[in-house]
Image 1 (cartoon, rainbow, N blue to C red):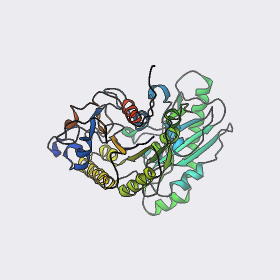
Image 2 (image 1 turned 135 degrees about the vertical axis):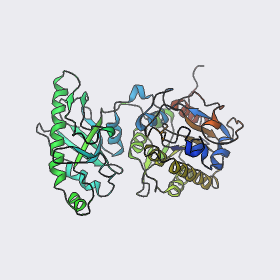
Image 3 (image 1 turned 90 degrees about the vertical axis):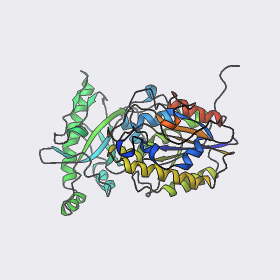
Length: 415
């Protein structure tokens, strides 16, 4: 392949008009001259992450961005978190997405995220890693970004058909959920019992941990429980790097994204300064992406989590700031890129409207620009400005194939 492509993913960037922003979305309100200029050098539109009107999770949205049909390959968030934590799952394992949380002595959930704990979580995970449950099932635990943790059960007769222990965001003040089977199988009943045993052991081990003793002295919420959700089995899917014959790299702070990239066959790159938060190192990510392009990678993915956090926390002004920082990052990169040799794409995995504080089924602003890409006229940047574009009504998976086609990686269909 003679050309390369850079894809920038602004996680959760899509939004709805906001009164405080003059009835504009954060992306429309923000000053983003480089995004506007780039979009005008290619094709653009509002892309449906998976299907029109279907809200999707970060995991499902990114599966589509990386070229997969989520309806075919998705088994749950847990296995993706395991990939992100570099846990090699085996057939028969089940994996969970976990949160370090704060509970009282009655196991009432006081804070599902333990004040978004981000320090020394590796020590907490290590205390759980290697625990054996009563039937000999091995528990594997790895800290992810902030309060998140990947949990894998390895044992006999495990099932994903269970209600897990996390009561959910709207139910803080309720007790840790008592796991129950979703079907009448012995495996589901057995797995539910193991999850309940796991909750008891977590509380016993973490309540006495030195990290929580220190947090108590500092008057911080203790991370004395791991709430489980997103249970799933091993994902069996072809690597897109092998399927399309490309060499890919992914740069991110979010472990879920790194997990999907690793599953897809991309080389993954992370740095402690890539925090998956508002303070992430934008220019550090940019420099690393440029270096990977210079090393000959065909497709380099650069992910920024911050817009999604602003949407979840109903911070429209912060979302505007993150859009502008993204734009400045792209401007910095453009000084060192030749658009005749390197295509640049931009998209999101889903919309996270500030007013909803959650994901929605709205399409996301996207473009693909560079040398010989067909061009369209454009008068600004953001959802409303792209509504006449050629990418409208396409999906994230369609957008992936368009990038691969411009790289010459899609085989001709027919004679």
